[in-house]
Image (cartoon, rainbow, N blue to C red; front, side, top):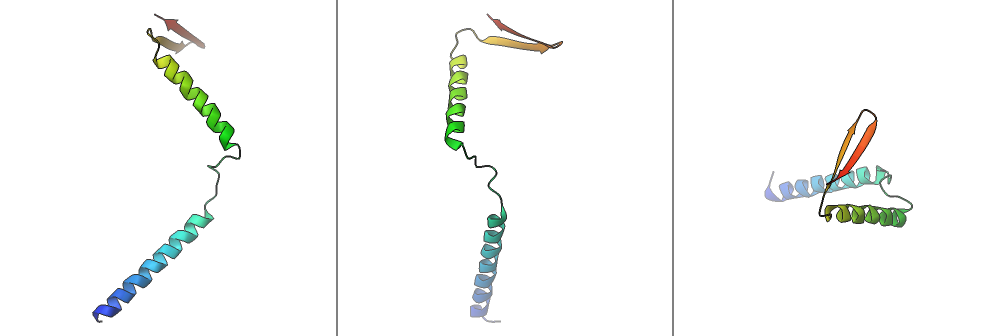
Length: 75
């Protein structure tokens, strides 16, 4: 086998790899994409704003859960 044949085999194997990879990617579903993406993003942004506001509090609240109760204490 000469040098040119090795390069040709390498190119063919690479092309087959890319074709198989493309076929596998096309079979995957789109379940991670929401039909209401914009509204979901707005809601997530509101949640992140609330977390940021809580982090900026001068006195951090403590949350304790137990016996079916949740206690939130502000110090």
